[in-house]
Length: 212
Image (cartoon, rainbow, N blue to C red):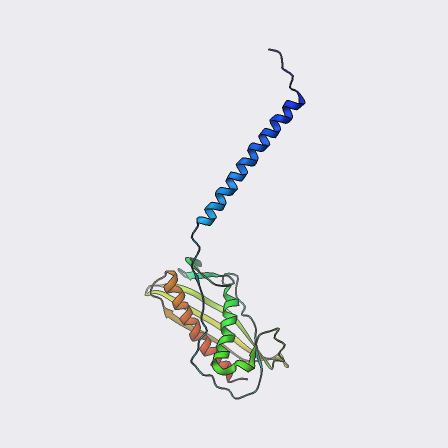
């Protein structure tokens, strides 16, 4: 059989047809993905609360700046950490924080000082305050720990009070609280973690307030 010559016009026509089919297919896939995303159930979001209704001593006139807490990458997220076993890390699938944990805890720490009648003496970096002291914290643990007795919310934060002029550590302490959770489900887990962090913040505010 002899070869049939194909004109340049026919080749261009076939290429254009193929391009249209590919474009239509890509648009269909994109629309399907968009519909799937719109139909997915959003992860429930939970907040932390600042403790109130407590007092903190200290009669000095020093100004305190509270810097954002540091944390390992596993805690520097809006995911809620679970420790199913020693050395094991996971996250709750049915819950998340309203912000990255360090940012959220930073805001609640400042509010805790304000709620303890330290409103005029506590600020954050960038507020233009000539601070006498700086509070530096590190989140050691902020997780739902699975134990033989059931799930327990564990919060542990180390704090250092630094003299701004001297740059020396004036005081340091580790604060810890553990609160049993009714279950490992999102609402119960976050409620227990919130209660534990409130206990830690009250301890820390009372401790720091006697220093400045």
